[in-house]
Image (cartoon, rainbow, N blue to C red):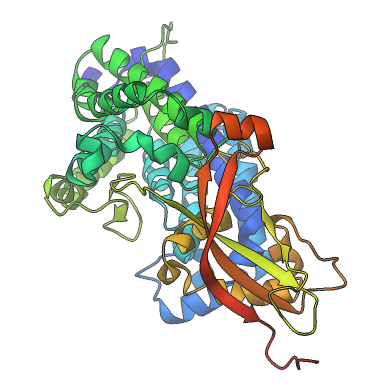
Length: 473
C-alpha cells in the first residue's frame, strides 16, 4: 500500500531514532546512578514496600516479580547498554522483527522503573518518554520505509505536548495572559541553569515578547504540524528553536530534549531514500492495530485538554501509552529553599557549629553559581524545590533523608555536591531552615560575587537526632 509509507521521511526517522536512543541513555543512566538512595532496599521510598501495597495490574513492572538492588541495577545498566546499541544503529542491521523487539526492550525496562518510581518519577517527561518510546517500536528499520500512520501519531503527541502546555498557561496563572510571568519564572523555576540569572535580568519588554512568542508557538503553530511540507517542517523547526531557547534558560531534565526529538520526526530532511522491498503485510496489520488502539486511548487526554478543569502531566493507563502534558500553569513569585544543616555538637544550640549540606543543582551557597545538568535529572534536587513550596510534598521521604544524613549513608551522600562531615564522623543533629532567595542585581553581583541573596524565613525542621542516641550535656 503506497499510502502506508513515507519514503521522504527516511532520514527523519533515522535522526529521530538516534536522538531518542540518546534520551533513553540519559534516563537509564540517571536511574542507575541514583536509585539506591531513592528507591533501593534502604532508600527513601523503597520499591519492596511499594510493590507490597500496589498490585501489578495498577503498576505493571518487572519488580513485582522480584526486587533486589542488584536486580534493579542490572535492569538500569541493561537499559543503558541497549540504548547505546540503538544509538550505534544496531536496529538497522537486524531483521524488522528484531528491530521491533530491540526498541521494545528499553520501553519495557523503563516502564518497570517508572511504575515503581513513586514521587521520584512523577514528572511528565517520564510518561512522555514512554509514550514516544512505544511508538518507536513500530517505526521500522532499513527494511521498510517509515509508516505514515506512526509519523502522524508522533505529531499527535507533539501537538498535545505543546497545545496542552499552552492551554494550561492561558487557563492558569493570570501572569501568562498579562505577559508578565517571565518577570518571575527564571528566578523561581525548580532548578536554574548557568544562564538563568542573565535571562532574569533581560529587559521586561523583552520578557513580554518572549511570553507572547511562547503563546504563538504553543497555541497556533502546533496546528501547522498537520499541514503538508514545507509548512509542517517549518512549524516543527520553530518548535525546536523555542525548545533550545528553554534549554539555555534552565535545567528541565530531558523535557526540552524529548520535545526536540519529537519535532525532528516532523522535519523532512533532504534525502535520497534507498529502494526497499514491499512492506510485509504482518507489519502493516500490527501498525494499523496499534494506531487504532492509541486513537481510542486518546479520548481521555483530549477530554482533559479541552476541559476547563484541565490537569497537567497525567497518565490514563498503567502502560503510559497516551498521556496529557503541560508545565508551569502557575508561576511562583517568591523562591523558597530548604537549607539542611548538621552539627557534631552534643547539645544543639543556635550558636552551635552548624554546617550546611550542598546540593548539586538547587541553590544553596549564594556564591555558588548554578551549573548545567539537563538533560541529566537530579531527582532529589527537584523534589527539594517542591519541599520548599510545602512540607506536604516532602512528607513521604524527607524524614528518611534526614535519617540517612545522620548515618552518613554513602548512597545518599552521592546525591549531594558536598557533605560537611567526614565519612567516619556523621553529624549528631540535623536541622532544616527555610530561606527566601532572590537573584542579586548587577551591582550586588559586582560587589559581592554572589548570584543569590537569601533571607531566613523560619524553621523547617527542628534539630533532630537518630532515635536511641542519647543526648549528652
